[in-house]
Length: 446
Image (cartoon, rainbow, N blue to C red; front, side, top):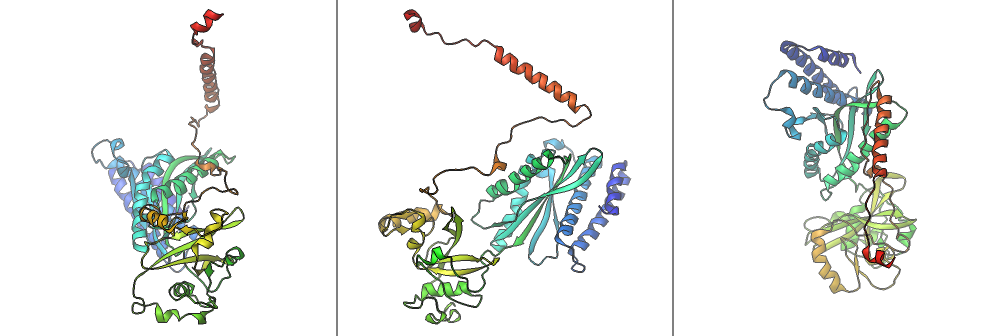
């Protein structure tokens, strides 16, 4: 912690009059402005860790400003009766990262329960994430929970990070926030406090949100397909040595070659046909990816579009040497590509491009497609002989048992008294005579 920030924090505890409050706020605003300038500076550029720490310090001072404001500035009404939006505030910070869309923090006012704080902060976070998705189509987001922890007489600010997640317009953002922000943050927080570290959360500071640009379909040059996919002969993989595999895959759909389908020379160059004059109708494109499951490669949809007259199904494969690069190939027979992951029966299947559900007649597929286009944004994976058992691995999502805790000099004696009280309650329950049901018919037989 820098000396200037430490001085501001110490001075805040000694503010006693309205004049002292205004003087402190002025010094605090000057420090925040200086810190934001340091955050935006390109020379010298701060590393990511230092930059995140700087953002957390700014948010911490903003939280302290709100705390003092409630002491010295009267707004009327009972603060405890105000809606969650009034108990939280949003602080946005400019950054110098090229791919950074937004860095901001939901600043805590008086929440003491981490779960309640995160749940009420979700509306503020999701508003900014939705705006970013509307502008950039796809984004990558992670969060940082910042809190003040105590261990005996020691006090320290610590943070809990969540993993970066790619978000798209079709995603359920509330589900993302619950599953990938609230649950892992609470699980990490509980694990950290239960370890032998001795640290305990004493105050919630803020939740920092970092939104970056994201291009999940960034492709590089030619990549050899996995052998399991090549043997199905359902995919055309044009051997291009430029960075235009997406364009070559689309051309392979529009102008299918009868021989040497992997050669560039078998197709017109994409620059001559992929323009408004060369395409009579708009093109809809579905993009599928691969995922290894039970030592088998399954095909799953990544991006789905409403099907038009000109339609292309493309396969996106990541470069095993570099996860940030990938390659596109043309799917010429979706049924042959995915049939082995549906069942082991041979024969023609009519596959729904959207959910990968299958039918044995074209008429049934057409009837299904009308409803599927309105409802399904993802694939349906049915159980099979190799994968028919449900398992549970996400232990962090288990419902937490309610418990009471106490941190004080008398915590041991308090704990003993709680155990005694619990023992008496259990004994009373077990010792109680519970009348049984009397069976008169059976009694007469006896």
